[in-house]
Image (cartoon, rainbow, N blue to C red; front, top):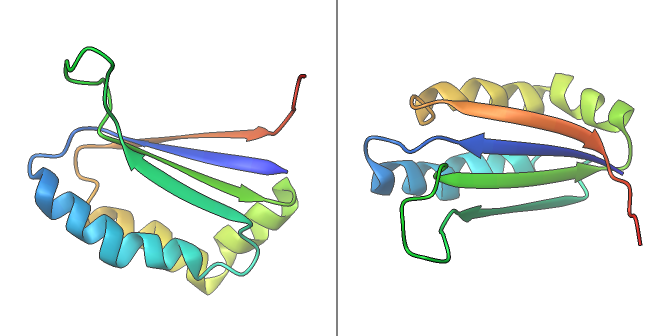
Length: 102
């Protein structure tokens, strides 16, 4: 399995960000044919302080090649282009092969 983790910075308008993310961007992610898992959540901390990031999303594919194929598809390109519509505060991506240790 191959994983993409998207880490979003705190937006200026959290409610607007979440509305767009849930009602537009998440649906675009699910339009990708090869995606095996998609989950996301708003960040929090155990002590109630402000977390370093606002939202984290995790997407899994069968392989790196499957992810690259999805990202280059029309659905993947539409999702990438949508970032301009809500992620003005910034987003970073981590990619890795999933290795289960124990």
